[in-house]
Image (cartoon, rainbow, N blue to C red):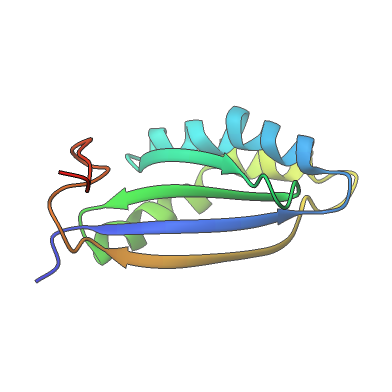
Length: 116
């Protein structure tokens, strides 16, 4: 039985809109994650593809993940932020998600290292 679920998400910003997407992550998406009990861990911007962003969320189960995303998408503050940030056109041209299960107790959740 899987004890936790990690979701690694990737977003590619529209040309010239990476700064706007990064701002929306910091000002709207991440606060919405926290409002809805989503365990947000990190946001990265690719050093190889400057229009590409990655972030990591942790969930106790697939059911918790589904419920959290449902609450997030229904959040009126998030909906308004998304709508207003896209007034000049879409910020995101491509996105994807990968679900990962932990194979070891050592790692990001405990701050451990695999070099032990």
